[in-house]
Amino acid sequence: MQTVKLTSRREVAPAVYELLFPRPEGWTFEAGQFARIGLAADGDEPVFRAYSIAGSPKAEGLRFLVKSVEGGALSPRLCALNPGDEVLLDGEAQGNLLPARIPGGDTVWMLATGSGLAPFIAMTGDEGTLGAWKKHILVIGARTREEVDRLAAYAESEARIPLTILTAASREAGELTGRIPALIESGALEAKAGAAFTPESARLLLCGNPDFIRETRALMKARGIVSPRLGKPGQLLVESLW
Image (cartoon, rainbow, N blue to C red; front, top):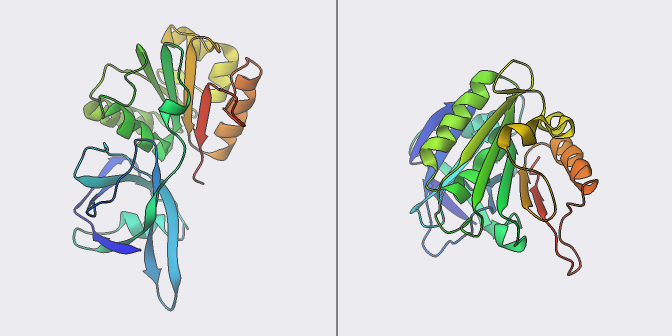
């Protein structure tokens, strides 16, 4: 375990903050992985949570997207930090949301809810990570149009590869209206993207809340799109840090 000091903090969407720290010497990661960060608690053990890394592996700093959840044990404290404040970094980078694990196809879909966007900022901000695919589609879901629009603007500003960005607001009218699983089931998402979810052409990366992950996996399984396991190839990877 080691300590890192906050370099900068900025709000990129309502209650979603980008936190930037210096990267410790020798600390490495791959785009799609996460780290455990935490803060000491008065008289208690430190509180840690896992957060996907939102910066390129080539960057000097460590960047995270944190949504301040009311009543949360850690996120409100992280989002209230000021430059110079210290955070605990526990161990090494972890996680298997690694695009190289699902080769094949010509289109990679990145489906995110809220701050689950973080690993896809890392992937699309690095020219080599998604180089095996001809088409890159990022779908961002959140409750309000303001949140999805601001997250999309942030993703666009950080991207270093050609990228199609689609947004879905579940509680307000927008580019797409509804939850991502419902838009998959209705066919609206494929129609808007101009691409299909098939085992031959599509590779999927999911990061977000548990309900979104569970429902989307079930929909994809019905189409023959599954996660790799026990040496069998697959077309879908997930990360759920809730």
